Image (cartoon, rainbow over all chains, first blue to last red; front, side, top):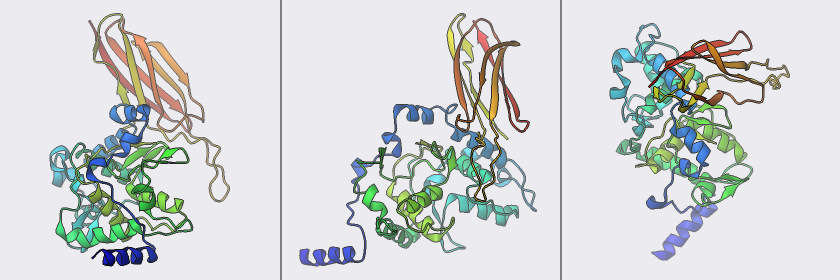
Amino acid sequence: MRFGFVILMTGLLLAGAVRAAEIPQAERRSGYSFMTPDTKAMQDDDTANPGMLWVLDGETLWKRKQGAANKACADCHNDASASMKGVAAHYPAFDKALDRPVDLEQRINLCRISHQQATPLPYESRDLLALTAFVAQQSRGAAIETGSDPQLEPFIAKGRALFTQRQGQLNLGCANCHDDNWDKRLAGSAITQAHPTGYPLYRLEWQSLGSLQRRLRACITGIRAQAYDYGAPELVELELYLMSRARGMPVETPAVRP
Amino acid sequence: MASALINVPKTAKRSDIIEIKTLMSHIMETGYRHTATGEVVPRDIITSFTCRFNGTEIFRADLFPAIAANPFITFFTRATDSGKFEFEWIGDQGFSETASASIIVE
């Protein structure tokens, strides 16, 4: 049995996977806990948190009639504080029509296309970020439950495989840093455990709100690999794995990060 | 769309020192950056922030390109009377936004 395990591990190493020890439940920490008191204070105060500017924009957009159907989100979903409560804590979620998981941004755009008969909003556009932030903020404080749907299992497995896959010129996998070295620093910055609890979030480095896909693409570029395009299934699977890995942790949207 | 977040205490005791916090949505483009084709991205910043209380100016700040996007300006003042704070942000390319908040001083 043990010999079999050694062979399996060797096989994984040869295949270029990372030897990753998953972070025990009790040791999981939000990126929030790695921040300085100043940045924490910025996130905690809704009148100091710049992410709230997007949330307010999203609230306006929620009520604005769009597309050929001339319908607003609110015309079907009514009051977001009731209808969207806890929704973001389940995303990315399985979409039956597409037969694959979709993230919150994609869900909003699918709704725009099919129900509002409007054009989809481009990734990272202010309007899409605003609507996503507004919807996700309704789940603030709710425990993440992504991945409880059994249909998602093969996609979570693919996301996990990508998380542990070495890639790029630096030949690093996500797990090299975020599972194995999260208690250390990289160029002075805390490495953190990669729990996407507060997306879309305001990054001081970006001076803007940004999506989890933007963050993932930046990380992939950082290891000098070719980043997937926005909306690529690989990115959604990675999002899905990371969210299911953060299951039970509270949603912080809109979070602030350095 | 929504642009300003203001935090002024709703009530205060006379002669209390109160904190006023303001957050304004703005990209604060420095004017020092270039596009991929080498053209300068034109400067687009807030240049001036003013706060008036019952018509009298109580705080003013000039802003410059080194100030981050979505400027967060906070300052302290003494609560003298009930009244209205009026905030005004003026900037490049005709940018002009106002906001207000009331306080009751007991």
